[in-house]
Length: 227
Length: 227
Image (cartoon, rainbow over all chains, first blue to last red; front, side, top):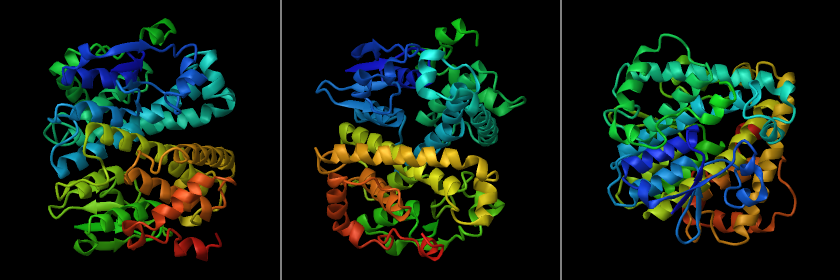
C-alpha cells in the first residue's frame, strides 16, 4: 500500500497514528506531496483525490481511498479486529458521531481559519484556497471562533468521560488530538480548558500516539513560515 | 427507539430510507421537530444534539446519536448483517469515502446555499443561520456553484459504475439521492446529467427507497413557502 502525505500536518498525522495502532507502518510506502507548491491542487493529484486534500491511501490494486474516516475504516478492519472504529452498533455510532464532531467543530473550521485569516501556506496555495484573500478574512475569523467554541464543547465532554466516545480510545480522539495541536500551533486555543489538556497529556502517552511517526503534530513547514 | 425529525427534509429522509431497508420503521417512535420555528436551535434540542440539526436517534437507554453516518452505522449493524455500510474493509472504505463526498460536495453546500442565498426557512431560523443575511448571499451562491460541480462529478462517476461505491447500493447512494432531490427543489440542477438522472430513476425504484416514508423528498414546508 502507498500513502500520499506530508508528515506533521493534521490529517496526515491522524493516519500515521492509525498505522502505529495497527502495526502497519512498515507495510506502507510513503509518497511525499508538496503542499507548499500546491501539488495537491494539480491534475495529477486530483485524479487520485478530486477533493484535493491529503492523505490518500492507494491499495495494491490501484484503488485510491481518501477521507480520513474511510482510510481508518479500511486500516482498522484489515485484521478483522477493529480497535479504533468500534465493534458493537453502539460503539460504532458514538465513535462516528464524535469523529464527525471533531472534524466539523474543530479541525475543519481551523483549516478555513488558517487558509483565509492567516497567510496560510503561502502564495502558491492561496490561489486555490482563497483567491480573494482580503475579502475572506472575516469568514476565516468566524470559523476560528467556531473552532474555539468546539474546543470548549470537547473540554466539557472530557470533564465527564475519559475519551470522546466513552471509555475507550478511538479514531475520534485521534481527530481531536490533531485539531488541538493545530489550534495550539495557530495560537487559537481558548484558555483554561483543563479537562481537554489533561486528556491531551494522557492520549499523547498512549503507545500508538507516542510511537507514531506523525506524533509531533508540528509541521516543519509551519515552523519555517513563522507559526 | 425514538427519532426526532421532520419528514421530507433531506437528512431526515436519509434515515427513513435506512429504516425501510432494515425493516425497522415500526420499531421507531417519531418525534416531530418544528424546523420553521427554529425549535432545533433552542436549548432543549441542543441538549440532545449540540450541532442543532436533524435527525437525532434516541436509544432506549437515553443515549442520543446524531450525524447521519453514525445513525446509519447503528441501524445497519443492529442485526449483525450490514447491507448499507459495507462488510469488507474495501467496501467500508469506498462507502465512507463516497458518503463523505456526497455530503461535502453536494448536500452540505446546498444547505449553505439554501440558508444564505435564498429566503431559506424564513425569519425565525434566519436569526440562527444567517443573522447578516444580505452580507452572506455571496457565500451562499458560491456554495451553490460548488454543489453544481459536485453533481457533475457524480454524473461522471455514475457513467462508469451502477452505484457510488461500486456495484452495490449503499448509504452513499442515499445521501446523494437526498442531495439531488434538494438540488431539484431549489432549482440548482445543472442540465444534461444523463448518468445521474438514470441512476436516480433506478434507485428510486429500489424497495427501501420506494417503501420509505421519507421517499417524497419534497417537504410540504418548502412547497408552502413557494419552492
